[in-house]
Amino acid sequence: MPPLALRAWTVTTAAGAGRQALLDHLRDGRSALAPCDFLDVELDTWIGRVPGIETVRLPAGLSDYDCRNNRLAELALQQDGFPEAVAAAIRRHGAGRIGVVIGTSTSGILHTELAFRERDSDTGALPTPLHYATTHELSSAPRYLRDRLGLGGPMYAISTACSSSGKVFASAQRLIAAGLCDAVVVGGVDSLCLTTLYGFASLELTSPGPCRPGDVERDGISIGEGAGFALVEAVHGDEHDAFIRVMGVGESVDAHHMSSPHPEGAGAELAMRRALAAGDVTADSVDYVNLHGTASRVNDAAEDRALTAVFGPGQACSSTKGLTGHTLGAAGITGLAVGVLAIEHDFLPGTLNTRQLDPAFRADQLLENRPAPVRRVLANSFGFGGNNCSLLFGRAEDES
Image 1: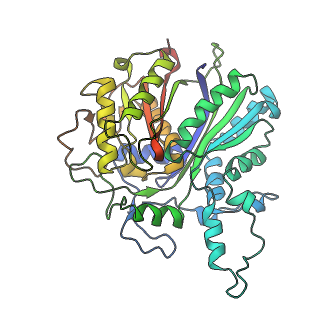
Image 2: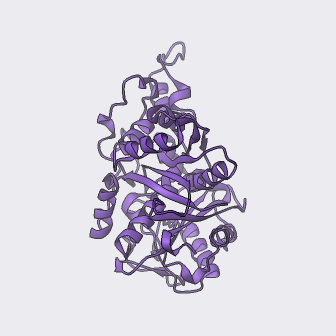
């Protein structure tokens, strides 16, 4: 598949709206996690909640899309000049030549969860109007972006749990290579909901404190929410091409277990090797790996084994979920955002909240920021069912 030019991008997490907010938290080593205060949820855990979603209003004519997930998408869309970049792409290519592929795991399910709380106790009837197709349904977010941005190309959602918004880049490559699109808006959005919070708690995967990726005493994940979007086009090799290129996407499905990875990280290893092969680069040319790094005991150990198998011991890496929480369907685009900031500002981000690394790990998992030139980054996002994705990206001049 051809490399992609990253024309524009934006990200919104618990750190705040826009990429500057994420950069500030990364540079300061400041976590955005806090004790769970979402609705009336009674769980002893910490979350990464995006401030300001409740006051977001969707544009006129799009009220049927109103739900927490699409409000989060709208908040992210308003940042970093992203709509203006898409408008410029429409002028270049035409609206019908720009596609939309968005990853999500639970979409706007909270909208339906709250509706069920208000159902008629006698008849079971739900409150009206309940716009299932434009809120709860998995295609809600990409449909919203298509209508919000005035696009007319192919549109669909990817829902492969936590790898969802990594895999959208592979879809964009295929749409462009097949001649169906000249540009694609990709990304992911996942917002807090009752299903996610109580579901992960029922699996005994949530930590009672801020998550500690890679820590010898790590005890679970911190659920977060987030949204990020990117505008990608084919690389033309001229002076107008973007500073950052997505050079390769590696995908795999090991199907070892419904919710646990292969203990040796077999699928994760395969995804990383495929990303390197797709980018035609060697492992020693990657300066930094943004780990999936959820702070689950099993997941972190499997990823370290896979990473060591591909890169050997000592590969510089970190998990940034101690800052944002695990953003689930938005994890892939969040990892890309962190990696692009590392490239643009020449530093390796540290792993927050982690006090003592697991002595069994062989990778060089950073606990503090480290200044360093960064040219190429690999970002991992691994989902339930062993659904894995690795993104390789870097400076345009270093592609060959």
